[in-house]
Length: 67
Image (cartoon, rainbow, N blue to C red; front, side, top):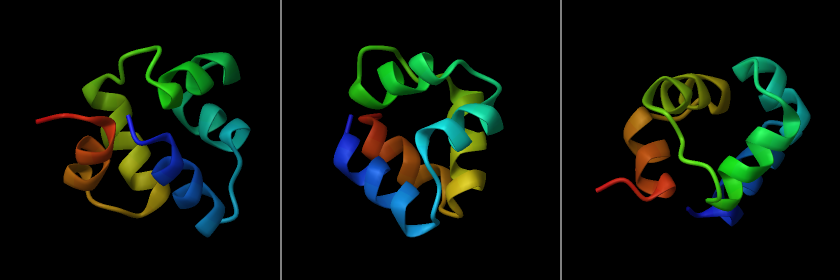
């Protein structure tokens, strides 16, 4: 998990992890754990995250560590 990339991507759109948590309908702690690699990102979450960040799903999966 490339936590730095995810944080930079959030910063670029002026969003916080709390905003992402609301978008994903997850607890902020779940998003924090996911971005630290302590919780696996589900495919639907990756799709929603890509839409939120305005990037491709492939880019999100790449930075999440998917092969």
